[in-house]
Image (tube, rainbow, N blue to C red; front, side, top):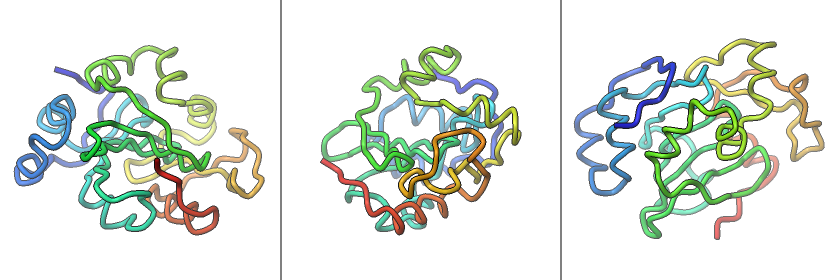
Length: 182
């Protein structure tokens, strides 16, 4: 069973949520929900998020219907499951693009202890440097570039601050435009 290292629970996943998504999302994600709940791990890098709350709060900031938010990163990226296509994607709001994501969540979650996998698969730079400067972000928070990268801000840990994750995603979408989902 996949486990997220250094996990700090925020809340258990309600049984109704587990049943609503059973058979709709990959089993390893359901296993994390059942064993660890909502919360964050890997020093605050990876957040196991409530898909219903995320869909409700983000609305049009999600680039396509039928996307189920599963995880968020401390840099406000959101890993979604595209139920219609049976594929995962990572919504890289900070860069204004959508990328493919691991097809095997067992491996992706298992790689969370590997610094190379974190850098390559999870695009976690400059997370270590900003955590050294600002500390572990709260569960509902993310690091955000000030000014936004889309508005010409430099991609430097010195230009990161902390704020509400979902509000930040909404702000990026309003100022930089919606992500193009193909």
